[in-house]
Image (cartoon, rainbow, N blue to C red; front, side, top):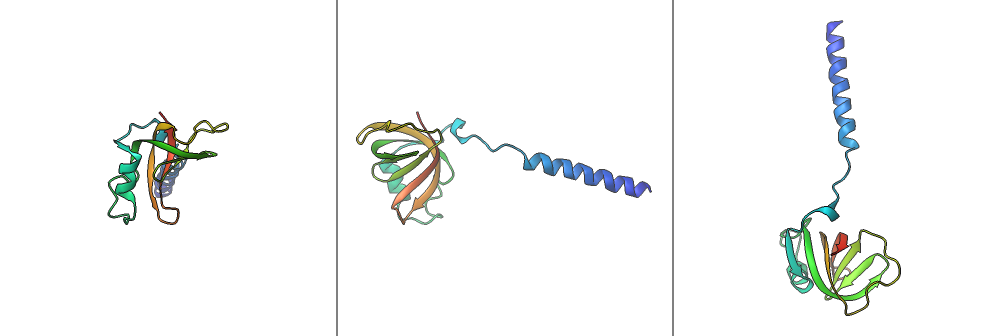
Length: 126
């Protein structure tokens, strides 16, 4: 009988820990400090055409990127020469025109060779 109570207590503690870990909120990457500050051209040159092992310096890092806007398409802001930044906040209309200089902070996902772009998510305009 005593063994049954010990096992039940262990199971309840494990269930409580698992529930707490499951419902833990995700980190807000838009509030994190940028680990590096680069121009869009420098980031593109570092990431373009390389495998994940070769460009792991910036993968999954929050960085600050400055560059010229090519276009804005909904919540995606594309910087020259090919940085696609998915903005965290909803954007009303066209806030940025082609040629505007912006500074964006976001997490680098990697290089997409199909679109020839570096993908950035959780982006906020600084």
